[in-house]
Amino acid sequence: MMSSPLLHTVYPLFRKIPVRSRKAGLIAVMLFLLPAAALCQTDPARDVLTITPDSEVYAVSPGGRTNFQLRVDLHENWHINSHQPKKAYLVPSQLELPPDSAFTIAALRFPRPRERNFAFSDEPVSVFEGTFTVSGRIRADKEASPGIHQPALEFTYQPCSDDACLSPETLRQEIFLKVEKTGEGGNDVPAGASAEFEPGASGTPPADQPAFFGRIDSAGLLLSLVLVFFGGLALNLTPCVYPIIPVTISYFGAQSEGRTRRLFLLGLLYVGGMAVTYSAIGVVTALTGAVFGGLLQQTPVILTIVAIFMLLSLGMFGAYEFKLPDAWVNRLGGSRAGFPGALFMGLTMGVIAAPCIGPFVLGLVAYVAARGDPVYGFLLFFFLSLGLGLPYLFLALFSGKIKLLPRSGQWMAGVRHIFGLVLLGMAVYFAAPLLPENFSGYALPGFGVIAAVYLLLIDRTANNVFCFKIFKTAFSVLLLGVSVFFLISTAQKALPDWQKFTQSGYTQSLENDRKMIIVFHADWCIPCRELKARTLSHPRVLEALDSFEVFQVDMTHAAAPQARQAREAFGIQGVPTVILISSQGTVVERIAGLVGPEKFTAALRRVQ
Image (cartoon, rainbow, N blue to C red; front, side, top):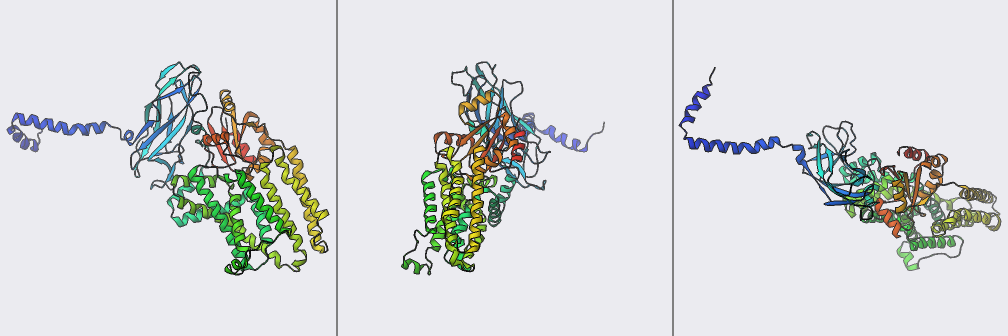
């Protein structure tokens, strides 16, 4: 046996140390090594987060459901993958109950993840970090015995730092469930609706939207404003711009002067006014949780808009001429009603444009709400609305040039009458939500028939101008044909077998394991009308809806108690919004804005 020279050197010195000192030194070394040994036995993945239930005991009846929330606290400099990682090799965060338990998770909602860039990935990674809440609903089996049960929620996650990832870990958190007999106060349904009806794992926003807003979050202010501006331009591809087009043409087409410089300034004021109102509405909506565009649900606001359009229409027929006092005219550089009128019209159009929603706008609302900065939010919405309004600046320039056409004085009075009827039609359009539901769909087509007959048989203005008479006749015949078509189609249109949404109806559908579709709409919402006319009445959609319970929630008066309760329960930020729920009570898809019949049918087929 070979011996070490170091041992020969150290051992004689060790022998000279008193025995008592040797024992004390050995104990000191052991005490020093114990924490290191304990550290070696500790799983670092388990130490990066803690989870805390929001209640000590949850009450539920057999076959019923109860609401729960878990607060997850991640340690600093750590994050975990979201419940929907973009890469297949990343481990998703999951929350489950053991399969042999008498309880199941009927619905689950994770928060919106953040998009982070890391050196190991070319694309942003979807993660959770900091403190967040996971909410859901637990369903008790019908055979669950009364008493206290203590199942363990199993939270599976993979913790990572900015440089490395640990192995996946499952953390068990026991909760207390008190099963009570029916009628003893169990939380049957649909308590905690917000947990179930918020976008779920596959609900909106679309997969590309978080990435987009993640880029906004990481970009500088200037780049963020540019991105949002182009998002506003894209809003012009939606039906919400329909009312703005005829108003813009009518208002600027009737301007007394057609000089390009003046029309450009008028257009800037018009677009700027629209942007200011739209931005204010957007920020208030984001910070208060109201319905985007909900100003148009208020009867005083509707009546004010109707009155404005009626007054403008009367002016087109020569009933009055609005002029500012001469002293004001001089201060405004010789302009009469033009500049203040254009600004006022723009402010009004901002209210009308507010129902322009969709995944992008709702995503921006949620993003501004999360930031909580009203100034930053106003800037984002302002540039969004500038993008929305830019085409109307050019439309204003084009419309104002009508005055420069040859011999405009002889037939311009007739053109003003047509513009007046257009504005009067807009008054009817916005007044329609105040009419009984059975008649509101006929209001605008009925007015179109009356306007066409008036132009053909009653209004003789400029009929001596041959070209204008041909134009007016063709316009009137076209208007008459379109109006009659919509009158007939409105009377014959088939719609799903609607049910007014009630808590009892929803509960009954869950107990019967029925799939559900819940449509949030409002009479003042143009995309809502398009959704009904183009999508929900389509034969293939109607066929696919046969296996669904179809509920509707009328948000026309969102302040009404039932509408407000449903809006808060489902987390509705704008209309139209459609929620698709599986027979197990899980939100499968959440659709915001207008979609076509093909996409809608495909979404229905994904619901099991």
